Amino acid sequence: MTGGAPTDGVPWFDVRDPDFSITSAAVHAAREKSWYARTDYGLAVLRHAETEELLQHPLLRQGSVSWLARNGVTEGPLADWWASWVLHQEGEQHLRLRRLMNPAFTARSAAALLPRFRALAGELTDAFADRGRCEFVSEFAEPYAARVIALLLGLPEPEWPVVARESAVLGLALGVNVRRDLDRIERALAALYAYADELIAERRRREGDDFVSRLVRASRDSDRLSGAELRDGLVLLIFGGFDTTRNQLGLALETFARHPGQWRLLGERPELGARAVEEVMRVDPTVRWITREALEDFTFRGLDIPAGTTVQIWSESAGTDPRVHGAYSFDITAEREPHFGFGGGVHHCLGHFVARADMTEALPVLARRLRDLRIGEGAVRLPDSGNTGPVRLPLLFTPAP
Image (cartoon, rainbow, N blue to C red; front, side, top):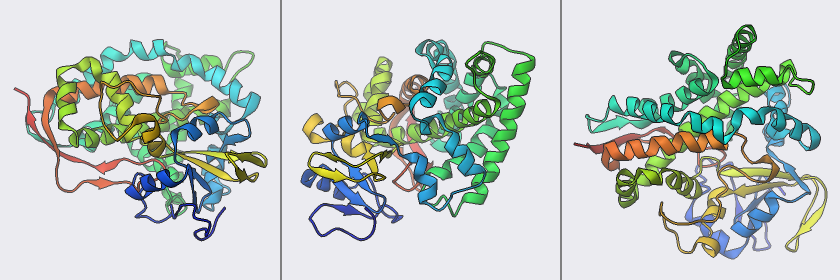
């Protein structure tokens, strides 16, 4: 399923092209012609109903496990770490790792941190709210995401720049230029490994009630995390929690800037914070595609899918499918079908409670303080594929009285 454009009338996209946009009008037009498209990576699923079915399909495994190899990275520290992800395990090993890690990711654990998330959002906003402008990524999204990780892990909050700096570089592994950036990525991975080793050693000397202490305790039970699983998993959680929250917050502010009435409404009704998070992730998710791989030949909706085929769920296209949601709208009061911003099936995001909680607290604080939100000159975005978000997001606003 690679090579040039097909001749059978099925839409085809060159997703390696740096100018390709997975949320473009061309993709939405293709969705009206076909439930799927072909790409130079494999199949792309464009509609909601097929997405729901395929995320649960027993003949599809987690597909991002092959991402590095498809981009020419087959050995070395990054390849080894990538293969260790709980996300990339299947069957009993996947269930075992999730079972051991789940106690650190419960809704109750996330709820206990809500007041601290709210206070942090207020503290960061205080620094620029009276100016009428800010660079949102560096002044809010990045420190907020990193300090949330610090709160979750029980780290000293002044150490957040280490988490932010190295995690931001490691995030390049999810992009189409991973091979080009490999040296930088592996240096960042080494730095996070060293950081995780120190953190684990400290918690073994002196346990607390924080996230890392729970994982350390899980490494001592009869069915336990090995030392390598503990370290690899901790680095994944540090990176994943930072990268996705930073990107999704930036995308949220971009989205609300295009819908000023909804931004005013959120400022007036902070109880809509949770709905706002779901609606943003439906129409503008940072995880642009969710990857699966065929374990064996099978036929789906009349399409023969050979073993080894990459099947990508294009989450925004599925999340805005008019067959389910009607004509495009952005409405934080609407009742919606579930979005796919956290994936689905057995590989549904382990940290979704925390991710939802920290954004639910941040967005109403910002909406209350930053009125008449506009995007300034000089915004810079990551490529609109893989995982995406703003790298630089200048905002203009009217300070709240």
